[in-house]
Image (cartoon, rainbow, N blue to C red; front, side):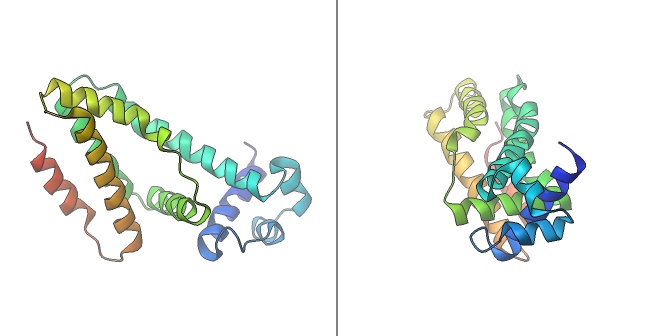
Length: 175
């Protein structure tokens, strides 16, 4: 990705978050990025192309976050590392801002690909099987739903203590 493409994507992310995807024009994105509107069309075709590029960036970041979980052999550590993702995101301003924007876009555009979570779902299911949980698939799904709910609450509340809830969940899932 070129420097200008990065500027365009960052400007689009910020404006989509501030003003919404539907109301943000490509001319406004170009102005914020300091580029011509034609350059946006050359690199991304249209506004939806920008949204697709932002989604792909999210997928790339998810793969990095998930790699440590998927490669883990110890089942208890798979669960612990899954919880730590939320803590890592909450403690890093840049990461937190990026994921908050992703969540906002997910709701506004009604785009949700649950397959993105499949590697972690499989790792958690295998971990719960090894730990002899009665319904490993349901435990994995429940844990992912809880984390999604925690993330939503974290992004929508000014003073939500993510760390306390993660500690509470971790203690519940200690083997």
